[in-house]
Length: 116
Image 1 (cartoon, rainbow, N blue to C red):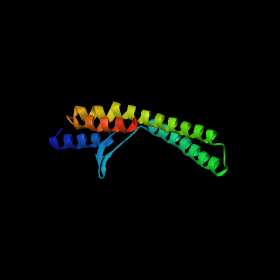
Image 2: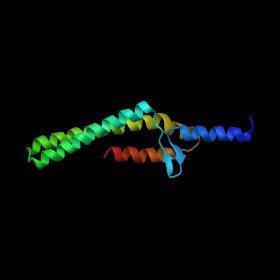
Image 3: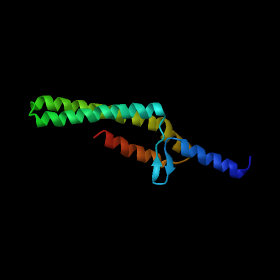
Image 4: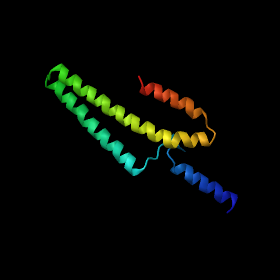
């Protein structure tokens, strides 16, 4: 195998991994199972948000609306946890193995944002 074909294979591998650099920065490449799970959760959350909007339009009791808002926040936190787990298991490990230790600073900033 020539050096050029090894470089091509390495480039192809990086394009298929979780956080490969793309034309507009890094991009995620989740498995179909993970992506479908995330999209399913987000679709449910979207429906819940539309429901909250309808509750406000119908002057539903504030406590009931607030409970629905808490439910949406919890669901979004679940999506964030799942994404974070996949990010740690793939993108972060990969970048550390490549010597890109700045990913740890990026990760800490992201975790701080999630914990607000």
